[in-house]
Image 1 (cartoon, rainbow, N blue to C red):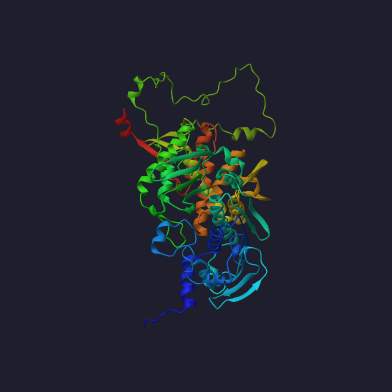
Image 2: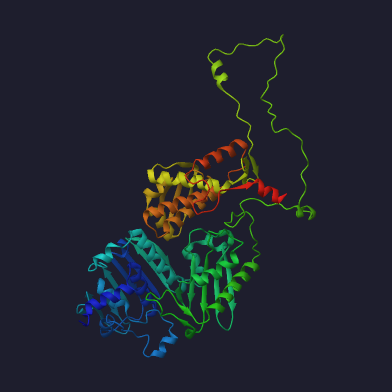
Length: 586
């Protein structure tokens, strides 16, 4: 039997599309504050927004009638006709946010227009009739959202940890702060100030205010103006590409959006400049005619549709490539790319190019061992008796067997086997060994640490800072000793086995740790991912030149692994060159 749903139920359903977590509430309220012409926005949260989200602005405020009407579904001042949808340049134009928030939380609004002498207070929850009364209030609006999802326990139950939810709030907060440098923003969590951003003269100044002056040397300016789109902003220096994402931002007509398609356009010119698993930073602002872009295809309005996205892709790639070229960035040659050959290939044709010199012929006997026969001392030379107690020790000690391993270019180990030659990739072998070691230690809660002689102090972004400190037991089990120093700063006293102790090694290790911790997977999958990322990072640390005994130890450790042939992500650790392969090459 068909029936019309009651308003409170329909509002709960609508809220599920707009309000998925505390960060959604922050996004909607801050965007409304910007649309209201605010010059200052203050955001306060308690318990990552689960207990309280308060947004105060000094915008235009509302009249008593508007203060009540704003909680009705589809109540908006942004559009009046269907044609208006083609020219939207504001944020909250659908009028669903406040109605949806009021359906799943207890809301108190205090507001006053500058021309009014008295303000208005509205209290509303569960879509019940609001309580309205006049109050004294400053010009602007003050929204207090308490007990989010108190009437939807299933939704509240599936919220993530406080640190994870707070990171999401910071993300939404910064996405708006970046596009509005002329507005002052402040974010406080549980009484602790996270960001306090004064009005900035330029977008670059706002970026540096958020991410620190160290980012200044990384930023490369991008600017291109075409009849289709105008692109401006900044991209990161290839040398400073990171494994953890977070500093990648697209904006169109003042609105943040996500686009894997355009992300590829930006990364394409970096292909030979950064390792495969690293992502460059970028802050790119696109401006185009409003009718050429649809911002209404996603409930959260974080995805948009461009009329000419294929052409914009090419323009974006060309703009990034031009910016990199102007700054004389050249490819690095020391990256272990996933597509690299498993073994070096030499061609006889190279001998005439001037780039290859034939090695000299050396005659030697592979069976010769100078330790096989020791010279017999002459009869007239006295032989000393062994020192009492030490004779047996020296009698039991034997010389190490001669090694038939060959180390090539500090990257490959070559050794004969029954079917031909086995070639082992040193870095990939180390990655497999470290992975199994790390994963075992995580499972057993028995870390193997390398204590740093000089602890390294790192200042992180607020989001990364929270990620590092979110799961101390997990990071400690892996072998990290990370201590909170306050003000988004940590001190690293120890790293897992295999990492160097230098500052660069520490930074790389923490970067990999953050990338793994941010991955949205189950705990078991996260442990595997964390072990894999740490193993890759440790394997990338320069082990120095390997002598034959060290090479033999590495091979022995590799074959002691459960899966010696492959790295955790499926690349080959070794290959066999059969005699037939060699005959074809010769």
